[in-house]
Length: 219
Ligand SMILES: [Zn+2]
Image 1 (cartoon, helix red, strand yellow):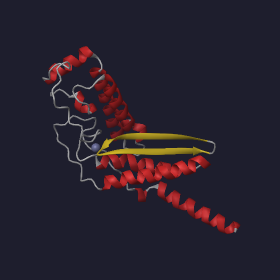
Image 2: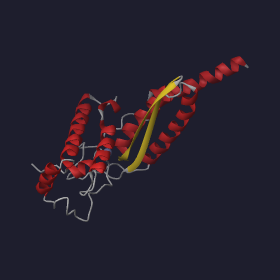
Image 3: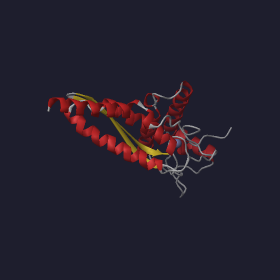
Image 4: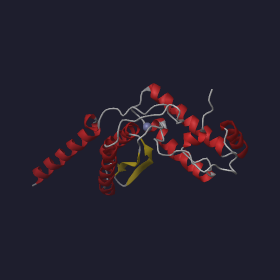
């Protein structure tokens, strides 16, 4: 069986330092944790768990010098002290390795009158992986993000920013994956239903209608 290239899994160059490896690991785990994908099927959640394990192993190996040297020699690469000039290709989707891919940031919020919780993920993702995460987060922040004065303003920005990121993904071609690429998942995530068919936008429109009706009744 071909040896998995942990540099490709983490999308880091072969001469990456520990800080770069740890940062890549954090970015990937924050995109792959099954809690982030509430609509994923049981099989997809199992795949995500396996992907997190693979990413953990990659970090474990590449941050331990002895294991890293062994990994490098198995890949037929020179020792890290003599890095090759070409870094690992970092253009593809961090999750599935497909191209083309965009760099995106998605945000969501839970407003709770006097306080709020916020979440943020960032990474380079293909059209389908990006939509899978972005649509979930946009729908959830459209429901839970508004409650509280500060939350109301901040969430308006989050919804707008997520819309811009989703619109950017709309312009990408269908993901194309080289089977020889090592990546946490072997195929793009299921993008799942478009936003228009989800509860978030429906809830948001209903909220606006209620606000208008209450204002009219009070006028
Ligand atoms: Zn992808």
